[in-house]
Length: 150
Image (cartoon, rainbow, N blue to C red; front, top):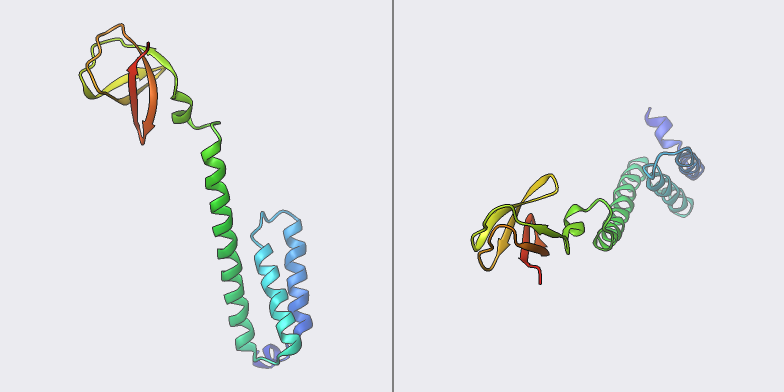
């Protein structure tokens, strides 16, 4: 086994990298992309620097973890930015501006209101009598901030 590992050269790493990239094309959803790039990097380094098989595999592992982590950070930042701008499937953002008629009196402070088929925690600065039209003005966490509709 050690003889086999010692016989691995840069072409083996480049071949592994290309095979992983080809497998990625079959629909691995990005999982093999960073491993393939890491194998190609090890192959390129091995072309100019003769390194031991142990260091080759350590390099492959480090490159794989680093490239995956860098992509994850970039993707997470992109996902957060797009989540802030979209409203589809984000019920809390869709509730802002919605008007509801109160079924019962609400005291000032925190209480509960029913919107459609769901009850929500609500906060009002002043008491509101039943039958009042209120508008959702803001949302913090799971608490709706409501005011009397003018």
